[in-house]
Image 1 (cartoon, rainbow over the protein chains, first blue to last red):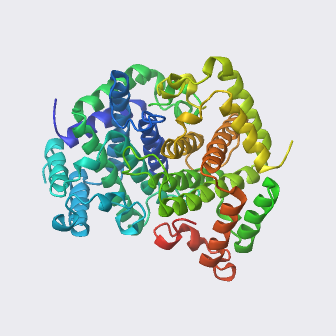
Image 2 (image 1 turned 180 degrees about the vertical axis):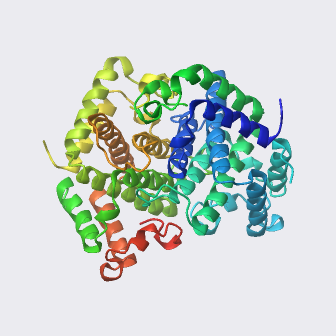
Length: 123
Length: 123
Length: 123
Length: 123
């Protein structure tokens, strides 16, 4: 199977075009849809308490489906807005590199667990 | 810039490894993080009412950042669980092809707007 | 302090009316806002791993604020749609009573942890 | 029907106690659950485009159920953490009063639509 983002996106677009569904895909509803699929992914871990793993076949199957849905909508939204996925991801990593210099952030749990540290919100 | 999912993922992994942050990335917290980034993306459209577009430079800049964050966490979670991204996405499209035959679903707004139709939830 | 839902709602409405903000509060954006505040509440637990508690003053302060925000928007949305909060909550409990008879559901972890059991989704 | 938050909460607690479900209700999973119910509420508006209203009986019925679920989990979480609901809501309104002085914020759409204004995030 191809490893190309472009080819994967074209596969998704072909599915959409065959149904004439682009008309429903405005950016606001796309953002809503990404949130809803993310919630379905999160549902796998509802009531799991301290069990943070994907440790059953059933959970794994569900994660595959819901993670795929998140990616499908994210790639569609990126496509519709004319975004270059590798570029926006690389730019975000570059920004994170500035925000969290490796030598300072190395293995720092508090970097991650200090939930309220506003500057870290979008990491 | 490379269009390869694998190479993009490796770039993200290099960022994480340089900080020794993998230890915090259990699947439950990764799913939480995807949800949180999806919420930050959705925030662009809070109080926009009937304006469903990305119609300012400010909104576009924010969408690029937050969509990148969603993708970064999604690719990391897929990597950590040993998932093949093109495969899980293709499998989901195949499943959707079965659920929504193109000839029946073509241009059907009600297919999309019938929010309560349980069978369509994971589309 | 009064324990009345009506009086608490009136307090929130007075805040809104003093700013003439009702005009922005359409149901779609209110639902978005409840989701965003729920995400800010969830952020308290991002990267907490197996620590599922609210075990610091900092976390507790944040939970108070974000839980209040969820409730503020929920009460506003209910008010704007003319809903009777005690009634819709009681009706939902009655429905749950039918769906989960106490004698069958008693202490059943699987009732809760079987994440994929579709019938339980809206519990 | 009683308008008391305490009595409504007791009704919810009676439902939970009859099933011995408190054991599953740690704060992290409660926050996850509030997010999931908020997502089910938001789903009512998925693909509605510029239609921001609750304009059908079907939508209204769904909103009632999902808004009730959000409130049920929010009241449970507040109860489990020993929070005084009217107090945390009043405190938040007081804080918002300081952040958004009525005379300055009056009818200001930009106050609301400037999505990226960081200081307004938790309003």
